[in-house]
Image (tube, rainbow, N blue to C red; front, side, top):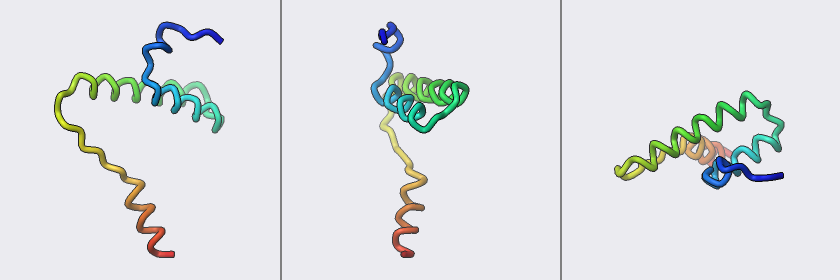
Length: 69
């Protein structure tokens, strides 16, 4: 399988995410939508000079569930 010019420019995390979508059997439309949002996010963050504040919505839920056990 040959890599296109677009693949060479793609961020490794985006490539990894698309590989995971293949593993879970996501359809092509889902892959396109996920790719579109990841690329937009990557472009926005690359252009931004502001510090990044990341929220992890699932992490808190996961911690709470673990504490309830």
